[in-house]
Length: 381
Figure 1 (tube, helix red, strand yellow):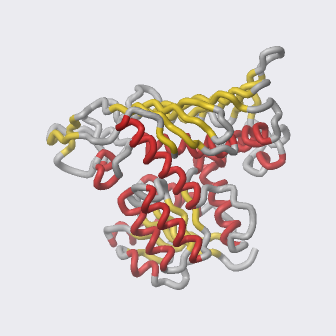
Figure 2 (tube, rainbow, N blue to C red):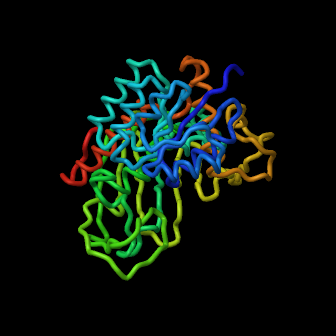
Figure 3 (tube, rainbow, N blue to C red):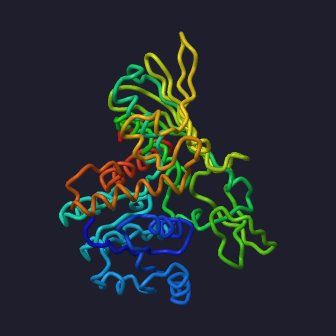
């Protein structure tokens, strides 16, 4: 397997801890360092997870020659700046999405990553579920003919009330887009990956359900938190809570997806329906171990995740026997397995994870959606 690859995680929030726990599950990879704004917190996490290094300075981390890979799990506003620093320091980078706050920044990062000849990835992890790979193979092999209509969306409820507030609602920290950039981008990447087709045109209608929200005066209001306070200030909201987007793909096929962070009861409902000339493929992230296959002239099928029933490439994503459920942490593990395989072979082998090229294109889609909604017309990506 060669030398142990040593990795560092920047951040201590939900995504950072998910990355850290996943790194602990990878053979040939050592989770070696953590960076936090609070050195005490960094030391605490380093002790708990048996990490060799704790930092409150990103520059100190990047000067450590023992670190090979850096996972950027910071708030969105820091992605561009830190991804650039990591690349300039000569280290491979796996960045949380979005890659940057706009497509100008993401294009610069892509060009820099290419010039440095480093492995670069973006955490669009949903493409790494076994049943997503199964769907991709079925589409690419024309098992059910050509796609002609694509639907679906990504629905959540953590912003349902006007008392729900997080740093993600601050455009200075999260960017101009929220629902589209934070979750719609996942839908776009997953469906483009399954179809093998890019979205080339969009027509969007975005909405702000709560133009004013109650921001807590004390404490740090985190994403997905249920903490309540009776001390707050009213702040104006500029990013979308929900929206509908018409899309057209490279091959001319069309579709529509909805995004919402204000749909009660939907916690992480990424789903799609792909209508093909002789069948339909349907998948739901909240039931990720099954793929629904619709037929007109014969019985519909529900294909369950079972390595013995999957195609060869999908089988490599399934680590447990049939009937043993795999979920979100396992698809994140699959992403990292692919990423670190690429680090080992210096980026020369297969890269089925989202690279900075994919991250940049997704930023172009987000920019086009924002422009489309503002101008109320179709916009080319």
